Length: 214
Ligand code: HEM
Image (tube, rainbow, N blue to C red; front, side, top):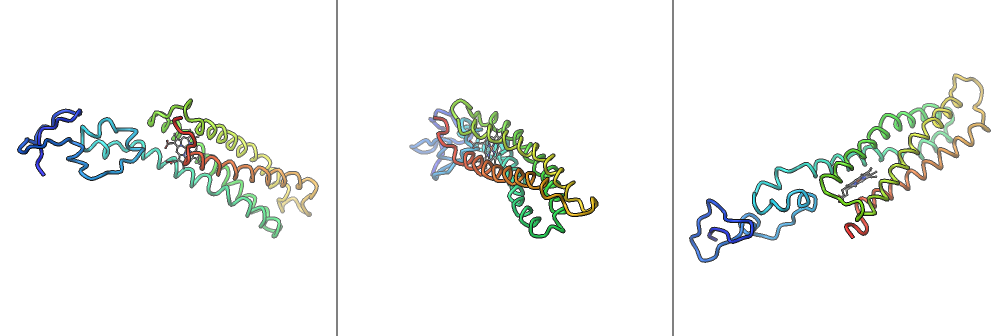
């Protein structure tokens, strides 16, 4: 195939002299076969794709933000699904309940909450970078509201967790007061279930984006 001065809307191609009958566009030159231009790359630089071959290779901000965002979802919210198991083990082995609940509180305050908070930052940057119109993407608005509820639940459950830990501390001496523990355990269980459901719903909304751009 020969290359020539392009008659494409993107303008002439310097350096590619016409030596044949059919001038070709830059797109045909650099993407001669059907190419799947990823939506995330395309949003950021599609207008420049046809002008400069390297465009999509040197604009990694959106994919980088998206990677950090998705990694935070996995690393931050993944461990939240371990809590029900900690609860079951605590009930089965009361002798280890104190350590198990302390572990739960540590994971919640040192891993889940800080990492999940970064999602609001990367999410907001993604909205700016990808020019997502909140008015036309109600899935995003719904996800943000759910996210705020999830974060509030995570932060508000910490005192309940600490109260329970204090009650089952072996250093107190004697058996833990069952009547005081029961409401705390029930509250933590309910919050745990609601958290898990909300996290799954947010993740599905983020990936599915029902009615996106409508
Ligand atoms: C304030 C909170 C959040 C904001 C503002 C936000 C914003 C965004 C935006 C703008 C995108 C790009 C959407 C697109 O590709 O068009 C995105 C993608 C994504 N978000 Fe969020 N997000 C938030 C929280 C979350 C949470 C809590 C999760 C998980 C539980 C999550 C999981 C994902 C996933 C998996 C994607 C990739 C979707 C895809 O590429 O198909 N996000 N988010």
